[in-house]
Length: 298
Image (cartoon, rainbow, N blue to C red; front, side):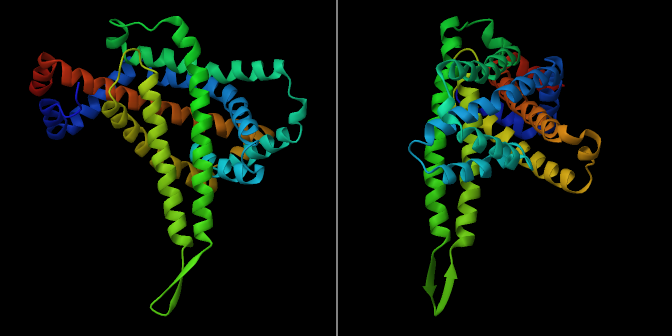
């Protein structure tokens, strides 16, 4: 199904508020907040083991300091204000990586796959119109998380190499019209755009592989761009809130990092699932002419 279904695009363009309300109603009907809570909880259990696995693997080919710097920069997109604490824990773990055994690796892989399994179940609820027709073989569901972890590792390698190159560019300057112009600003803009592009592609890839059945890359990109835009707004609001109004450190004390991380993951999971709901509603509008006519009359 092409994303440029003229009737569907025309309906969404002429009734944007109605379409948004339809997505919100569908999200509420699917218990989206409850599903997001489950995804956030298992993501909290899976995040650190997954990062440790990726960092240990990549530290054999990339300088450890450069890897941790890049990881901290992009973790700030996911966990505003808390990336330093997590990177510190990962760095401490790397100092004792010689103690890592096969049992520990298997345990970390197991916990890293939990979030993917729960996310797949949540996606099945949202894309119920797909799950009723096409069902995924259980072996594919079992292997999928580990294939995705491998893909994330490769993606992290590419991002680290590109980010390192951009940082080198930022240290350079060019002489133009008799003035010395630093490239630091250009480097910062390119790093931000790299992060945004990586965020959209990551979210789109989740929509590509998680829902049962084949999802077009155009629809996945639609959901990824929606979720990324909403998360950018939420991320800046979170940074402002925790730096100005929040008293969470007074209330929770030593548990502050865990609480803030859980809260950030809850919001992120909610927006991730809402992006999936946008795709599902668009698919229904584009594929059901009867429903489209009913929506236009509503």
